[in-house]
Amino acid sequence: MNKYLRLLLLIGVLPNLSYGQAVNKGQFYIKPGSVVSVYYPLENKEGGDFMNNGELFLHNNLINNGKEFDFKGKVPQGKTYLVGKHLQLIEGKSLINFNSLVLNNPSKRKAFEVKAPLSIAGDVEFKEGIVKVDSLQGAFTFLNHAKVSNVGDHSHIEGAVEKEGNEQFTYPKGDKGYYREATISAPKHEKDIFSGRYSLDDKKFFKIRGNVSGVVDKLNTREYWIIEHSKSTSSNVILTLTWDERTTPKEIYANAADNLHILRWDAKQQLWVDEGGIVDVDNKTVSTPTSLEQYGFFTLGTVKTDKLLKGDVVIYNFVSANGDGQNDFFRIDNIDRFPNNKVEIFNRWGVKVYDTSNYNSNDNVFRGYSEGRVTMNKKEQLPSGTYYYIISYEYKDESGSRMIKKTGYLHLETN
Image 1: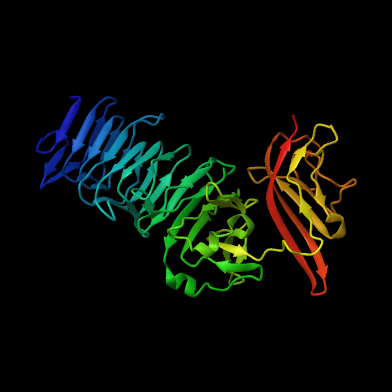
Image 2: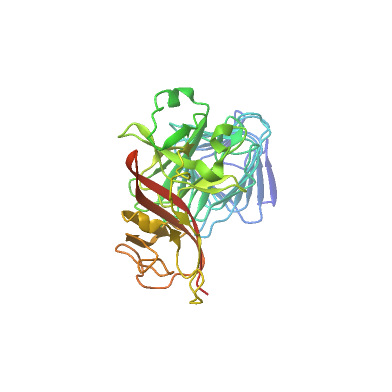
């Protein structure tokens, strides 16, 4: 095979080329170092094997009903470029497996429409053009170790995106021309699958989902995210969402550091419930303090703060467990006034490393060791790093009794 082949009017390059279409009915292999460019719609017919270990430039549609559309060998190879000037359809009944994929189509609003199952083993470069995944026929799956780059308003995915694997992943998703990312922490297993989607200005959605739990103050009714996992997935993840001044109402992020949390729609209770919030104002992100236990619809919201409670607790979020007598334990002033309390600490992966009830500043305190009934590696000193805490306690005043929950960062130094 020549190093570069233009499949325009070259009969014989593919087993069939007719009616303005390039057709493969047999075996077609692009060797490493070879470049093939197809200007007509490319169809891999039933029984056809199309293997790309080189470079494939597609200027038109791709239809795969064949036996395989893949790369050859166990080591992922090959790069495919979708470089049309008009809408490109990716369709067919059979799985299309790309190693690396470059999306570069200047069509406005929608450059690519996926109506076939598609998977990525390597990386996807979002140069230009928005991908629309059909909800009935299409699928866009990133396999373990797959990466994304250059994603933004100019190029992202509208519709459901799946991620398989045990690595942290930021979904390249958006809606109506806005890129609105969501990130999950690393699942435990290579075959765990989490799917994500983003939706903007769906008024009908919030019209029937307007109820909120008592702790919620304001609800973001402009946007929501969907995060689901497959039935075979047993692990849970920490979820990180972002706010954007162009899509997120100002009243939601105005006091982000104080009251911005992630909310989840509880289908059983038929209301939005608080999943907590660890806020990074500089990066405009908010994360659940621990791994999720339930999935579905998520959005941002503000919660009613208890900062002005008389005699409330004061939390010091630095522990230096080196025995010098300074910051040797996790200090929570006034916690002894609320004996009905619980303190939980989690590492960055959402694994619980400490939990106790009736926390106080005398003997029952966190000193940088894993402790508790359900913690891992009990009595072992924990490594230096950033952890997350959840403090729950019963607060009583003339209005009665209620449970207060506080979450935040905790930095631990054990060196």
